[in-house]
Every structure is written in structure tokens, then in C-alpha cells.
Image (cartoon, rainbow, N blue to C red; front, top):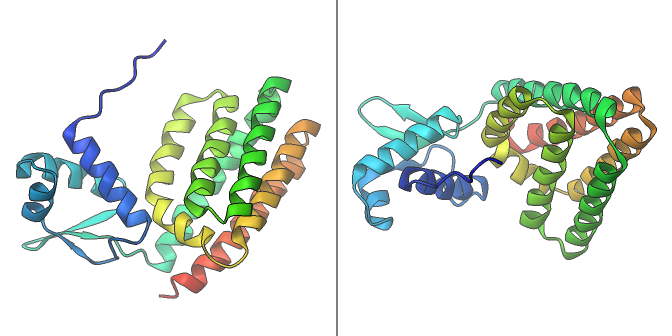
Length: 216
């Protein structure tokens, strides 16, 4: 059994800043001043710098010479490339999950769907987002490929601000839920074609929304 990783100061700061970026508290191109962040978290600049380097690796901030770090502003092309990679990995994981899935895992996914329906009822976007993450990571765990999961986790961290803003737009919570229902039904039927079609449907909808939200 793997031991739970201890969260270091840089990890804690990076996670907090990533959450603020995802929620739109920190805006694209906003300057992240190391001394101000260090003062807020009652630490020196070294852990802050390490946290910002983590966020740079996750494509959430950009380093500008002689200026420092700013929140990343994604271009439309970058968004499409990122989502292309995310959804191709989801397709691979789904194909593998269909080969391995058992009834207990299906029940776990059904339970997540029930909680998602409750989150929609409450219009709990943050709660739905966390359940959305749990849904996809459950499918990746069923796929039984750790390298695939690690690649996916990295891309999902990069896409988090985009996914949060997309989910808050229009009727996307309900549409996402319907697409998840279709994916689970395809898993129950061991129907790879239907599962991939449901993923592709979600990809098209998400990109249409993001094209509106990020027109440049």
C-alpha cells in the first residue's frame, strides 16, 4: 500500500494558487508578485518560487524575463491542442476500461452519477467539478495503466481553469452529466464505439463553449 505523500510548503502554495486561477480569482496575464505571495503564506520567497515553477510546468503560469510570473492566457490554438491531447487519452483509457471493468466498478460510477445529479440540482459548480474529476479518474483506474494516468493528470491540471469556466456556462452541467451517463451505459454494454462517440460528443461541446469564452 502506497504511503500518502506529505504536502510540502511549495506544493500547498501551488495548489492554492492553482485553485484561485481555476476559479477566476486570479486572471490571465495577472502578475504574481513573489514577495506578496510569500507574505500572505508567511514564508520566504524560495518556496514561492518553487511553487511558481510547478505551476509553470503545469502550464498555468508563464515566466516573463525581467518581469516574473503571470497567469497564463491560453490562445484558441493552445486550447484546441490541449483538449485534443486530453480527449485522445480519455479514448485510450475508455477502450482499456471496457476490457477490465467489473460490476463493482460500474456501481462506483453509478454512485458518482447520482452525486453529480444532486450537484446539478443545487447548481454546485465546484462540487460538480470535483465529481467530474472523480468520474474520469475512476475510468483511468479501471484502465489499469499508471503511465497513461500520469500523463492525463498533468494535462487535466493544465485544463482546470478552462474546464471550470466551461462548466459554469449555459446548460453545460446537465449536458456533461448526460454524456457521462452515455459513457457509463457504453461501459455496461462493453460497447467501445458508443463510448468513444460519447467522449467525442463531449469534446465537441466543450470546444464550442471555449471558442465563445476564449475567442482570441
